Length: 146
Image (cartoon, rainbow, N blue to C red; front, side):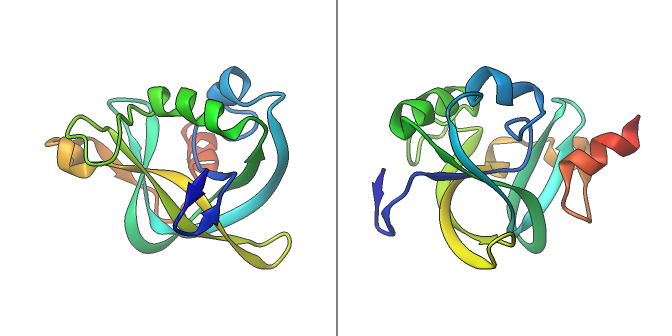
């Protein structure tokens, strides 16, 4: 997809879209060209009332996967539905899709990728239902719950 950062075909995932998680198989299996461990700046929460994570702006590190996808534009449309992203500035967005800076630490380089950032403005109960994940890994958080 063409953006102000150039043509971007990568996505940073930090929750249910990571390999081995429940939405990976449904939305991404067989469509991933490459996958690298990566991190980005933000703050990560687990939404206990919804059962999935929320990344918001912040200065912590959030750990996830930087993936490059075949048929990127069509896959992105499917993911927009999953993440309830209805377009830039839409007041009904649960997540906002935007381009972020990602550190691909497998190759020690910086990349640009799309990511879904939680729209806190649309969740009046965010602080009541959000569990802060200080170390920035939702997969590790889920392991601790077991």
